[in-house]
Image 1 (cartoon, one colour):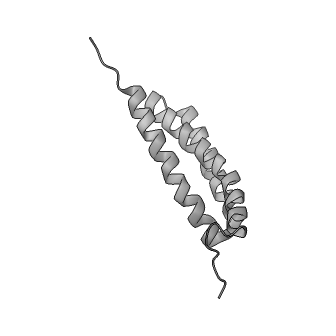
Image 2 (cartoon, one colour):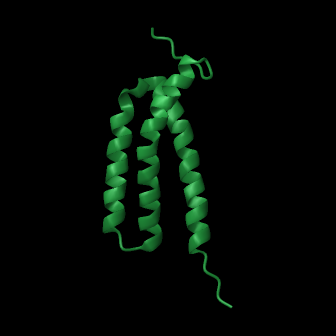
Image 3 (tube, helix red, strand yellow):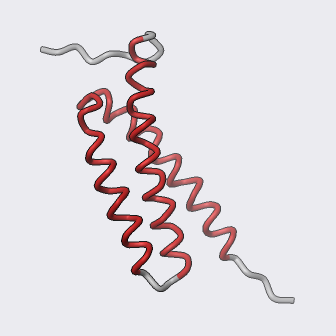
Length: 95
């Protein structure tokens, strides 16, 4: 019997990538506001294009997941602004 770990590797890495973007969105909105959305867009587009150019299935898949998570984070950034306005998260005081 032969075991194939590709699915498990991709699943665990996807879980970690999504977990990485949660605090990035919170910190990004806190320090830069929603004006940093373009950084997520550039990273997302670059990662998705990179996934098309990489031959290795695992690396290509993880680049696509990273890119999609980055693009998804743009919407979450604007949602985070609403959560801050509701008082669910702290607002950064301007000095």
